[in-house]
Length: 459
Image (cartoon, rainbow, N blue to C red):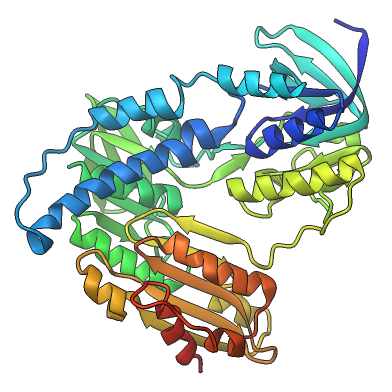
């Protein structure tokens, strides 16, 4: 096809943010074209957030069952991966089929194409169809939204590329588990997967090149989680240098200096690569080798161009993409609304205990030159922690800008740490004075009541 087709808006990449934006634009009466080279809905519902949290939920139920002996009598636990695989296949991903998501967009009024969308100048997008043939070229009156997402990073480890290693995409599609596993990467994905598989009886080793797992989080939270991992039988090696990875006779070998690890499988969970290397950035005067697309507070990236999601570098989280999609949609449709602000960006790692954080860590706040005061308390020492018993490990840590008397960051680690975080996210977002927080009534006995103790500890 060579004839140009006019439309109002082209969305390249239909991850959660792109899908939401396209739906809203179509419902607003715009003529919307959506181009996605894989599954409409993106990484989150098929390979990320949703299936992985089903895995976490299943593993958590096993852990709770093991706690029955301390709390309520006796229980015999026989792990089985089959219900997990069945639930992910049938309930989360419908067999990794995006028909429902495509129909949802089409019902809103959008046109959906599977293929590779590339910029070809301001407001212009060419489409390469799945069979490699040239599809239509679209000329968008309003412009183009980039939401191409990311893919697992390719690590420069000798021999790794030639082995059948797993990424998160493979891990969520497993129907059987290995007896042993090496996880390369101690970030959120690596930690969640490591604990899940270990609780199902897999012998797990986590390798982290940095000084600690969950490096971007508060070091106190990382330390607690590492201690829990070790108690659960997970081997954690930090500050490692991985020399090579090889695979022969159904086994992996991972060489770390004078130490060699062997395992049935290797899971690589160490970073993501933005899908910007084949999207035509050079045609709109942007750096084709860039790892991020710079955007303003309305998500504008250039003439007739907006970008949302991981590629903006504002946080590789589904909720960031959804937040940005609403801002970009308002700008595209000419609606008023607040600009983007990331001072209270929340995030949660769904290990047990959960590790939730918002805003700045203590280190970041000090590096920014703030007059920092810190308050913290151990969650298990709270009234609810005492009642909860096994599994109540965690902490609340508050980071205050003492000059302004407001929180600029916080960590909530513990059972439902991500839910406790909601309280703290509101405080950081709205810049609620810590004196006002101290004057509140905190329900008893709740986990969030530990925030009161952390406030009292600010010094």
